[in-house]
Length: 380
Image (cartoon, rainbow, N blue to C red; front, side, top):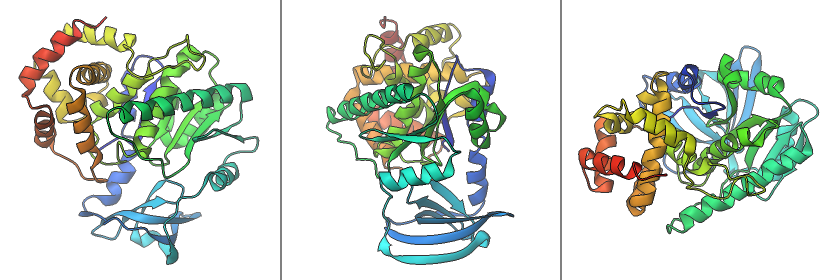
C-alpha cells in the first residue's frame, strides 16, 4: 500500500521519519480489511452522503464511490478531491443526485478553505494553484512562482516523451502557515506527534500540500518541489492515489525533480540536475550495499519504512530513477504508464512487482544492477 502522507524530511532522513509513513494509512486499511474489495466501474453518478464521523460530529459530502468493500464500506472521492472512507453503519442519509459528479471550481474551493481554516487566512491564486496562507504575501508569491515553474517543467518533461498528462480535475491546493507552531498544530491532526520532523508534506487523503514560512529558501526549495511533485503526479494521471505505486518510483521521481537552482529567481529551473545530497549518500551506501539491494528496493516498500534503512532507500531510489531516465528513458516511461493504470487499493505482490519491472526493461535484475552501478560511478 502507498503511504497516506508523502513527505520530505527537512534534514537527512532520521529514524523516526520512515516510521511516520504509515501512521494515518492504518485508518484506511482497517476500514476495508478483511472485507473483500471491489473497484467500482467508472461512473460519474454523484451522491450526497451524511454520516457520523464521531460521537459529536456529522459530516456531509458530495462525491462518487471509487471502491466498495463486501460489507458496504466505501472509499468516496469528494467534489473537492478528497478521499473519505465511509462505513455503512455510520451513514445517516444517502441521496443520489440528478447531476453527474462535478468537481468544484477554484472559487468554491477558496470559499471552503477560508471557512475551514482559522481567521486570518487569505487565498493567493495563481494560474494552477490555490495557496491558502496566513504569512508574508511576498513569500507566498515566491511559493506560487516556484509551483508554477514546476508545473510547466513537469508537464514539459512528459510531453517531450509523448505523454501529455491530464489536466487536474480539482484545484491544486497548498496551505502555508505563518510559523512552525501553527503548522504543528494543524499537522499534528494528520501526522500525530511527528510533525516537528518535517517542514512540508503532501497528504494523499486530502490532496493538499502543507508547509510553513521558512526564511531560508535553500532549506525549503527542495521540500516544496518534492511535495509539489507528488501532488502533480497524483493529479495528472501519472499516479493513482492508493494504487500500487512502489515507493521507489514515487520518491525517486520526486527527488529527480527537486534539486534547487539558485541562479534562477524561482529557485528551481528544471528536472534532472544531479542531486548532490543523494549522490553522496548513495556512494556511502555502496560501501555496505548487499547484492540483493535492487531486488529489495523493487519488491516492496519495507526499506522505506524501516528507520535503519530508509535514508539509503531514498538515495538508491533517486539513483535508480536517474540511471533509468538517462539511459533507458523510453522503457522507464512505458513502465510509468503501466503503473498509472493501477486501481485504488489493488496491490501487486513481491514477485509481480519484480516481474513487471523486468518485463518493461527487458532484462534480469542481475544484469541491470551491473549496468546501474557502472553508470553511477560516472555521475559527477
